[in-house]
Image (cartoon, rainbow, N blue to C red; front, side, top):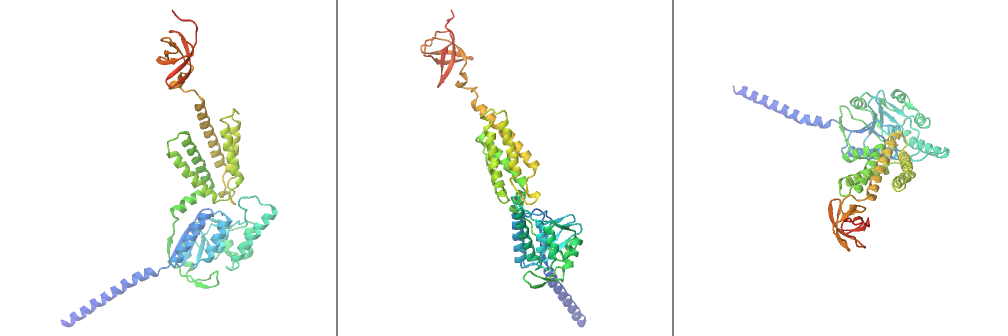
Length: 441
């Protein structure tokens, strides 16, 4: 019996030791799962995109992540922002993987520059990349300027494509001839490293591969069953990203200007003025980050001047019409981005310009008419009215005007019962003159 108890105790000790070992191994297994941070670039490439990318790289570096995955879908964007983003990708201590996804997405224009800069470039089936011919921001290029911009972009692309060991000639064709590539074409031309249907599959396919970093160092990727941790945009980045849409920025600019005018038109309301000021400041801040034409601001200012002049000069709507046309042209040409998504669309410019012109003209004209019109209440409303004296005015007496008794004064004596006309007001006394020389009996 004693031997049985000893064996039983040993069995319990063995089971306890096994449980402790499993308990210790489970957290270690969970902690050993590689962490891959994920960014979603699903918009135009502009300063806010750069801020988002830079913050994501910093977080991945601080957390010693296995890699940073950038899921991209973009029509392109600003070359200046693209250069800054490529610089951050090349300097990242954590391997950067750029993945064109989901199906139907693209990495066009500036997106192609980003795709080629990554340690690993991948595409999902049904995506495309390329069409990266540069467009000078904010100006129309002549032949010589166009060649300068093209050669500069080509040199920039070659500076890291060759270092990454990718096909420089095929990459240059995407810039020189605006060629676009399917995933299969890009893989065959060695512009990308692999094709994957989704992010988990991509991570498993990359596990164990040895890559050469931009500085020449070799690194083995450990990404199997990686934890994909999404880095979401901050509130500021979300708001500014929306404002970087020129059409939205122009819309809130016009609405804000109308609210500010409404505050001047109806003083003391406070809310329209405060809200309008906030909207105008936000719009100007966003537009200032985009390529803007200074001449377009002059057109907008000139348009507002013409609309205001319409209320002072009887032009039968000519000045207001000319101002509205100038306003539409000014808004349409205000932002000159390298791609249509970074320009003000005609529908937006026409709708906001015409609405602003009509509303401002109507409000200003109504205010001007009200200022020039005769008062309809109080003593001033009596000017021009005809009344009857209730007692002799020599020089002061009472008269009956519009059913009310008023004190009146006249420079000449007027008998009782005579008709008088109100010619002026002094305080609460009416100044009158005789309307008839006949005195009723």
